[in-house]
Amino acid sequence: MTKENSIQSVDRIFSIIEKIADYKQGVGISELAREVGLPKSTVHRTVKALTENNYLAKDQATDKYKLGYRFIAIAGSYTSKLDLREIASPYVRNIVNKLNVTGHIAVKQGDYAVYIEKILPYSFACTYSQIGKTIELYCSGLGKSLLLGLTDTELVEYFRRLLPRKYTPNTLDIIALQKELAEARKTLITRDNAEHEEGVYCLATPVFDSYNKVIGAISISSHEKSLINDEEAKAMLLESGKQVSKQYGKII
Image (cartoon, rainbow, N blue to C red):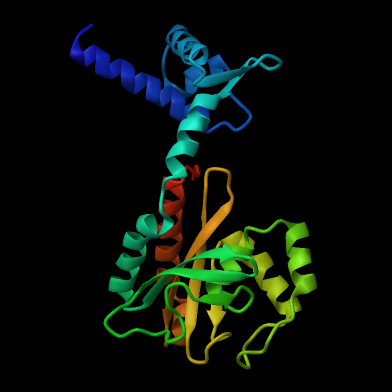
């Protein structure tokens, strides 16, 4: 086999693997061959070899193929070593530099968001935050994004034990928060309309892993109220969140 043919074979293998990854319920050989534009016999041979090595798994009831446990094990080993602060910082810094806002990265700890990174522009906005400090989930953009990771049952339990403090006149009550979170599940953008610190406005979005679990959140903050309705800022933040999540194995 020539080097060119060898490279072509590798390209075919990866095109098959990537297409199978798009099908959560699995995909059959015929459909897979159509999708990747390869002869059915070629796809069958490749899939057979990958299945024998446990990179793919066949559902005997449907004759469909999914990613196998060896891919899952490799992905789990890799993502467990990823540092959210290290992965997300360049994306957040890019927004900070372009929009002259303050950037944050946080993770959930109990009923609080914990800052694990703060990235300052030339003139920073938020005086409260610092690395290692915690903030309530219900009154911060980061916290609300982290709340998107809770199941309906977990969210009900959270609201049940919540005793919201009115930090500013804009701090939401539980009913208003529930409504905002319901909308945020669709947009994946949460905001802080000066709800924790007067004169500070934030936008945030969650970061997901390969199991669609929220593992953290990124945000940008400004003294300008216009930030929370800035479509460019929302788009940049969403795209950054998607790219970070992609590195944790989330299929976009």
